[in-house]
Length: 335
Length: 170
Image (cartoon, rainbow over all chains, first blue to last red; front, side, top):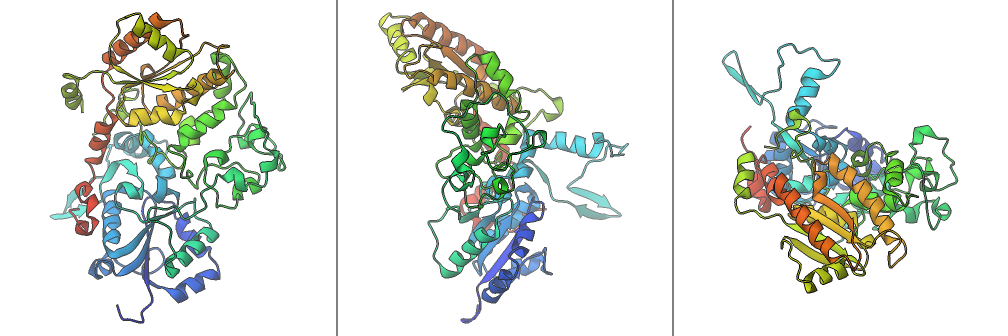
């Protein structure tokens, strides 16, 4: 790299929805400042780059690589390793790369069950021969290949070493700008840090003052079931808000829009397992002294795992559903 | 996996992490000891000031680190030294059990019991029962299961030295 060249950056997506890519564009005019300061070495979603461009660049030649999305396929795993080799800083961009995100909820099933649903039993599917994707298939004497679909969805740091994490679904413009600024100036916190404030969202929530000292709830409600009072703490209204266990830094966008936090910024540094922590906090609010009564109130939470681990199942202490109960034959084996 | 389980099961003993509250169940375990009651040695007791101190995070962490079962012992309802810590435990365990069920962990692996300081024989009985129940369903061994899940990664061995790992077979 010539002496006066700008630092190179790379963007890549793995198992994600594309919202993180949008988030980069969401920087609006500020993106011009970023483009001014860096050279984009690789960004297949937006610009015409090929894998070979990356492969032919020297190791460590990219200043920072931002990867969004979880790791589901063998190709994503390879790209993660490739970018790791080429980049000085590897940054997990967004909830999926940091925690597994929404795609990791598929860890409640396994590959066989997912293939069966997607390629056979889903109502809109016609697949009389029961064909499933193959990693390699001969066609007219040639061989066509597809990446392998892994049994388990992983966060980026469960596959390669990650230097920094940008939280959010997607990361907000403020969080991105601060992070890019920190990287360009070299003013970085210790390796492994999450580049967002380490306080619970409740601390930054405009409804904080209306959160009662002691909450006692007899029913949990979902946002579509009630008219939400915009001036009162959502938990006090019986709506499950993950604010107490979730990192702030998002500027409380959801509570400000009268919607509960679903936990996309992930845990604060003091939380070991978001779902267990949130289950702990919520169960303490249940107004029942008999197990049956507690069970009845908690039954108003229809999907505890999907609610408490919405973005973090891959990085939870348990990581994925085990198969020891053998409840569904299709979800039988973990390999 | 089944073969692996069977191999593990040879010489395998259930490992139970037991969180006992200082005021009731831990005292009961003491009583069981001084009364020379016999019960299996499979429970590793951790004394906490109150069963209400047992964060559900501790339970999933115990499983993640290789426990086959977790036992929580607290004061009977109404007897909590801190007034209502055990009620909170009851609610937390109720919710945690639903989470664990959804994650495929059997109910027998988590047990909550109220055991007062005078119930030394109940400590012995509950631990014996739990050891038998877990022996019947076999090891959980999450550390080994995790290693099994990661066997599908092509570059698992290269994780420590990522620079060497570009490419790979398709």
